[in-house]
Image (cartoon, rainbow, N blue to C red; front, side):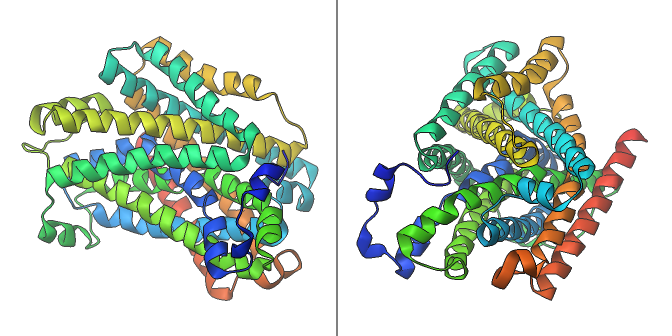
Length: 420
């Protein structure tokens, strides 16, 4: 894949914006919105709404903290791509032994398969509640439509980014509507921002929220998208990479800020449902919404879930291509990779296993992948020989190190509780 879009796309940019702050800010928008789709995927639906239905606003602060953590991580990933013009996977291959790079590739592929599992299941559940389509058929439809979205990348990376951003907008608008209907209480929202837990089960759920928010594949994805755009941005604006960093920060701030708003809205909507009680599955949430908040809100929820599954699974396949090319300098035909990542999800749906149970275990697998992405990210972004003027400050390195330790510890707590 070329780091530049088509000549037609290049020519379409208004040359009067070249080098202007407004032009830099506009042209660098995009990669973070694609990465943000990982922060509002079906796994987030399950964890955030479970937290709201079981504990009201008590775990709202966890979502806010996890969202702030995501900003730090994704800023580092984007800065890595901007400074080097290469993605995290490729840099790992170039700066580690062959055995280490192979090991990192294998675990990254497992993470991507687990991610695809959650996204396909989410889309299948949405089609089931909207149209009564059997789960296996719905999973196949989700995979096929996501493949069409992914195919837009062959006509220009910007088209793919716009399609994913459009699906992201559906999720955002859906939950904003549901939020307005729910009518949150300002005092309860403020109380939910105070750190605290309501027992061991709430700690377990909080750990799941963090694990579902800091997605390891999004780190590879964001660095790769930014790396592909670097030459294009420089050619269009005439700006240095240090100057382009400002536009990247705006992209990350807007995209992840909106993702945080969606995640907060998920919890609030679940917390404000009349007769609130713990719910165990996405089917339960839809049924409860229809009974207690009306058919319109239930339909909006299902549409947002469908958009989430479509966006996240197309992004997952794209990430798989980036990871394989970076680690191995090889790639599979897009249709073959789509089939290989789709089959495990369809197999699980065909067995009759609870979709929500499958979602939980996919998050367990993802928890193992987080340190394998964050540790190399911290190491590489702290090297001045690679990063130049964009190298981490001491404060940034300390923040990334702290995030890595805290998330890894929380995920081990999650695993201990699950197996215990």
